[in-house]
Image (tube, helix red, strand yellow):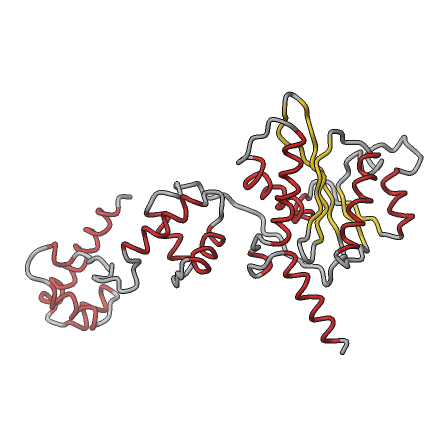
Length: 315
């Protein structure tokens, strides 16, 4: 039903209220008949000037917006958003507050970007709400996963990633094959990396990929090389349940960041050049990139804060 039709019907009802009060000679009787209060009656009686338009609802929009963004602030938000198109809303707000002395809220940034056309209207989708969880200390659980990376000269390569759930510290490398032997080699390198960062890995979590387990191949009776390596290192094994990728969401989210800020933004002619740049990107990710889930600290800073807290507690 059109909104204008509803507004006019309400105005007709208010005019009938005033007319019934004159016919009945009693304001109280007219209010009981229309189920309104006496204060509501006097409000519309004072506003009525003989025309139906005077009984229409008026706009409730404020006449002034004292906290509205100034033209300079609006231009600043748009300029930073154009310079960092791959950043999310909260990351943009963090950049504005840190480097541009911006003192408005995240909601103000969102409205400014929406007015500027950065956010297209989208259909609302019902999304399942998952319970977020965090590990109590570094090394409690390390998620490992593999993703495809863009081909170079028709050669497919794979990115192996290991991420510590507590600190978000990552070790990642690009290889030309995706096999159990390569997974074992990556696991050894990852354990050496975490050991250098003073992280003792207690548990490793992966999906059901053939490079990690024979769980999807029940006819194979021998132990998988990856699982044998974990057993010899004294590390517990955890498999992500099938159909529940959100339980491995931290490594999946880090892969999305790699796509948005590395793979989709750079083009390399050779695999060696990409591997060199990727090592620099991982160093930037671990030591300089701010993470919203870590209170806008880098993984290295978050890990250092935990070590400092432990040293204070043991004094």
